[in-house]
Length: 330
Image: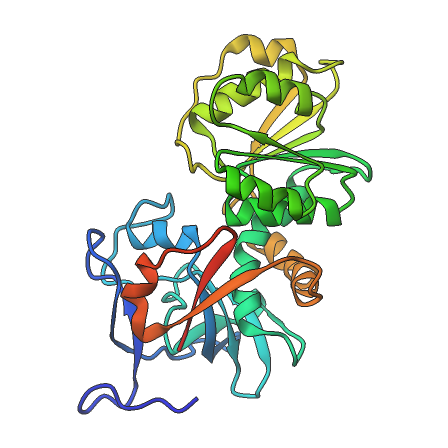
């Protein structure tokens, strides 16, 4: 990729999406290009960077890892080309600028080499949302072959991938729950054995009947839907002493729940989280090659919409169809 000088006298400059205020959309702007600082680092030409919910929350300052520093370049991962010509997927270091730029600083220990024919846009669209359930089911719980999984929030992009990934990792029964009726139809087409609407009356009865005996819940919602679902599932279990692992991944419906103490006494419930901090960086990186191979295999249904980096403000407000993920490309 050949970069055009971006301002007079700035040879080491590049274009990037830049957040100047948490109350405003990122805009296409000029930033100093990164420079490798250690032998483990390399500067790559960015080919694609996904616009994930994690990126949006970082850009508006609401993510739990945000330190409030501005200006900032958003983006947590991407696909790039190294100076040697290798195609790599990488996760940005915590102290490095974001990935929505023409170039990014990459720690080789947080990157993996992709097949030469891998599609950068597809990989960038799928790795971050797919990683949430992949790491949860591989590193946080012991999903046994033939086990059963309830995906709470299956209508979101990460939830849709979670349905497919749970099946790939050996679940014999996968249930998807969410509010959007149109997206629930899509979840069923992606391989869910059953889908449950979280909208309207009778939610507790529906969840209890369908998901009462699952082994794992992958929860992208939290908040009031989790309060309702947790009680419904636990009270409907045939054997309450049978372990249930409830893995908290996202908080799309709220950041807190009211947890009645009797639920912890009345059933064998383990509540745990999966994300930055609960899994080591080394542990997450160790899972990347297998997930990348799955993404590149076309076994997963992935709907990616590329948008030019120069149109970052439009990308931030572009409506997407169910299951679609926006990807910025220089």
